[in-house]
Image 1 (cartoon, rainbow, N blue to C red):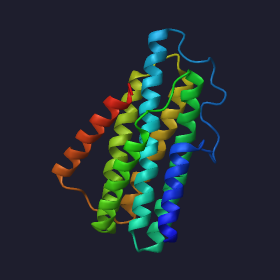
Image 2: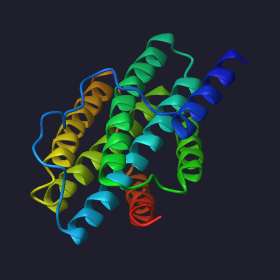
Image 3: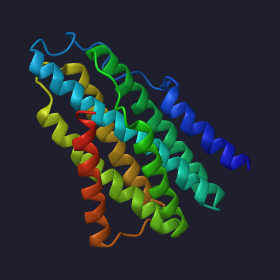
Image 4: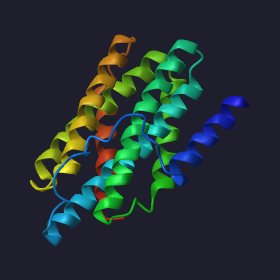
Length: 206
């Protein structure tokens, strides 16, 4: 019951409360207020909205995986990763506001779907759950790399945030590998990429 209440509290805080970062925002000290061109600003808003959705999903995934495992050490691993992802949640949230954008209207749906996937991965065993982390983080890292190509050149703040997030995601994948992750089958990886494509395309606009 305590674990369930903790998971519910995490969901409510992720969806309805301002996130608080434990590390400095990478965009601090960046010059300029963002893209001057209206089209470029809309692109930055769309991309940072997608990144914010990704962090909402990360909170759901790690919360569900921590709930599913019976290994106290692994639970602490997931909880630690979740706290680092909270930094990303706070940074993307603040950047969206600075750009004059808003979060995705479908965040509760994204959270619920990611929580279900995390719980399923956890039920399949700890090594599979860690493998799910590895594949998720690798796909997110590639996705963030593409955003560095797409973000307007004069949006220095957004680019600084995305670059730090990319480095953190690579570290999370490496940590999961070190903890005993097993590779996921190719069809599962393909399904994950397809689901991510639907989410990112939709969240860019809604």
